[in-house]
Length: 459
Image 1 (cartoon, rainbow, N blue to C red):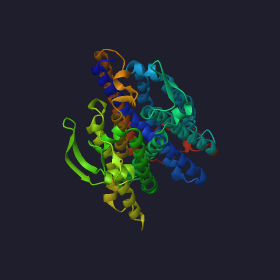
Image 2 (cartoon, helix red, strand yellow; image 1 turned 45 degrees about the vertical axis):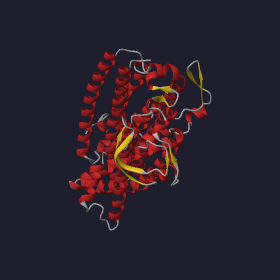
Image 3 (tube, rainbow, N blue to C red; image 1 turned 135 degrees about the vertical axis):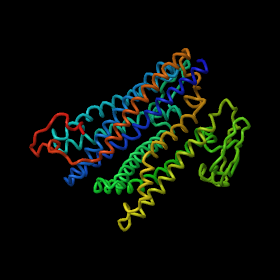
Image 4 (tube, rainbow, N blue to C red; image 1 turned 90 degrees about the vertical axis):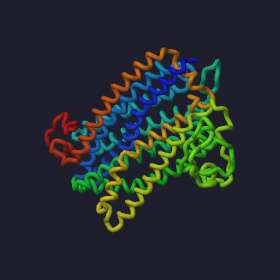
C-alpha cells in the first residue's frame, strides 16, 4: 500500500489535470454537433449566413479540440506512473474499454477532422457535411467508451476476481453496467447544454455591442429553443440518475443530501454546513419530506444515513454536498434563463431586454462550472474507493516517493496554466472578432475560384 501522502498528491495531480481536460470535451462534444447542424442548414438553404457561422465556430472547435487532446494525453500516462496498482489489477477490464475509444472514436475524429477543417473548398458541400457529421459522431463514440469505463468503476458488473485481479466475465454487463446508460445520457446532455449557453452568451454579447446582429439574433433564438428543450430533459435525467445512486451508491447519496441519520420522510436540505467531526449539520435549512420524495419518489421513502457505515467508509462530505448544490443551482438558473427567453421571444422582444442579454452573457460559462461541480460530486463521492466497494484508492496508487509526485505536479501545473492561458486568450480573440464575411477563396469548388492552402486556419 502506498504512502498516504503519495496517494493524496496523486489524487490532487489527477484531479488537477482532469479539471483542465474535462472542460474542453464538454465543449467540443456539443460544438461538433452544432457544426453538423450549421453545415446541414447551409447545405439545405445555401444561405451565406449559415456558412459564415459555420466557419466562425469551426475555428473555435479546432482550437478547443487541440487543447482537449493536449490536456488529455497526460492522463493515460498517470495510470502507469501514479496508479500502477489500479492498472495491474483492473487493466484487463479498463484497458480494452479505453483502447476501444482510441480505435473507434479517436481514429474517426482524426480522419475526418482534417477534411472538415481544410476540405471546405476542395470537396462538395455534401461530402463536407458528411465529414462534419463523422467528427460529431466521433465525439459521441468517444464519450460512450469513456463514460462506460468510468461507470464500471462506479457500479462494477460483469467481472470476476482471480488472485486479486479483475477479469471480464461478461463484456455486455461490463460495458452496459447499471449506471452507464443514464450517466451517458446525463453527460451528453451536459455537453450539449454547455455549448448551448456559450453560443447564447456570445450572441447576447454581440447584441449588447450592436455587432453581427443578424447572426447573433439567429444564434440566440436557436440557443433559446434548444435550452428550453434540453434543460428540463436534463433535470428529468438527473432525477433518474439520483435513483441509480440511491440504489447502488447509498453512501454517496447520503453525502450529497447531507443525511447523517437513516430516516423516512427525510428533508431536502437547501443549505447546511456539514460538520464531519460531530456527524451533524450546522445552520441547516430544509423542506420537510421533499428529500425522500425526490430521491425515492415517496414522501416517506427511506434514505440511508452516513452513520450506517464507519467514518473510514465515507467520502469527504463537504465537497460532495456543496458540489451537488452548485450543479443543481446552475441547472435551475439555466431553466429560468431559458423560459424567460421564451417569454421574451413572443412579440419579437428577445433582443430588446438588456437585462436578459446580460443574463445570457453571465451564464455563458455556467455549463463548465456545472460540469466540474458534477464531476467533483461523482468522483469524490465514490471515495474511499476507486472501484466502488471493491478496491480502495489507497490500494490503487503506485508505491513511489512523494518528492517525485510533487515535482510532476508542479511541472504539470506550470505547463497546463501556460497552455490554458494561451489557448483561452486565442479563443477569446476569435470570439471578439466574431463571424466574418466569407472570402472568395473559401467558397466551394463550384465557384471555380483559386484557393490558398492554409486560408481556413487564418483569421
